[in-house]
Length: 153
Ligand code: HEC
Image 1 (cartoon, rainbow, N blue to C red):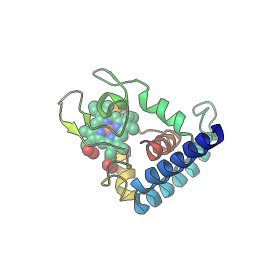
Image 2: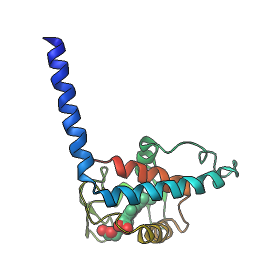
Image 3: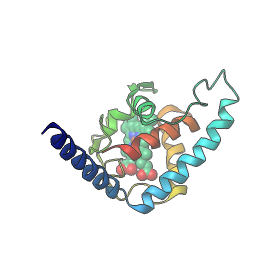
Image 4: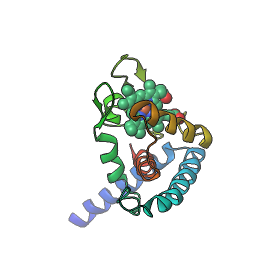
């Protein structure tokens, strides 16, 4: 009996995981893979400067990406995390902390408009980091963040 229950649970999980994967379009998946590989190459370069980038040599994990997303950083006005505007789960619709304007979800699993143009993502990412923190985010940070977003559901 127990074995049968376990088998059903396993089958359920399998169905669930294929459904989740199907939510990201092949195009989004391809672009995310390419971007993550691109940032992995750059993070290797960063890692040579150990004093400044002690974490850049680590593999990208979604857990590290989630920490990056939730961590507060100083901004000129106030301390903000990415989640301040994008909520604590990127599948949700966000709201700008200052203007209250709605922001469409970041997670590609629920938003087919995200990550369909690699150049645009790279440019927006850099611009966005400068807007918020007066500096670009590091390649390691971009890599773990995209790894997290790709798995967000
Ligand atoms: C002060 C509010 C605010 C904060 C804080 C914020 N964002 Fe955003 N973010 C926005 C707005 C506004 C947009 C543009 C609206 C849109 O794309 O739907 C956006 C868009 C994005 C996009 C989509 C770009 C694209 O090409 O589609 C990504 C990715 C993103 N933010 C990541 C982050 C990350 C990572 C952080 C933390 C380091 C962060 N955001 C912090 C407001 C914010």
